[in-house]
Length: 270
Figure (tube, rainbow, N blue to C red):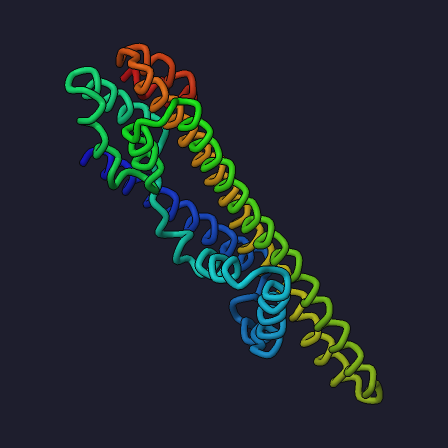
């Protein structure tokens, strides 16, 4: 229960950082551009927005597989990005020490169900392999392959989302070039030229905003998540292998604490 509360706090913390960062960006836009709020209507053009966002999505469809595209949509729409289940490494070490204690007290068969509902299921899979009777080398290779392949899948999605951050400004520039071409067809009326140039530049603005305030920040956040998840799974891997080798809980704890950051080690001492 305590671990579930910790996971919930971590999710809320991540969501708060996203909302806080977005709010700071919006505030800086309105503060840094005098008169933006009073003239905001001139910065709104549905056609330009559809061109940039729709073109970005279309380019992503061309660049990826149907399965990966569905995952990308879930991420960028916020469904997977905001609902993900987080666990920290300190809690993982606590959990593995608890499993080691139970294994030493009642035998390995008593801990096979202790990983259910924890994280994304990696601990449960590791404990299931531990109880399968297979040799330790096979179990280690299977778990290392699991970690490696998942990292590859995540990196593939992260790379595609980062590419979408590059597509958006390109489509913005494309809209600007096309808009300028249309404006130059009617250079006799200076008012229409000025208004048309302003409208043409909106696509570049939308492309920059979508890229710098959404796609690129999401990419950086996902890279952090990927590294954290990989480290957590390495801790689980080493912990399960130590339990399989009948190591005492104290030795398991001391070994796994080495993976913790300075702040997490300080938390443990408290």
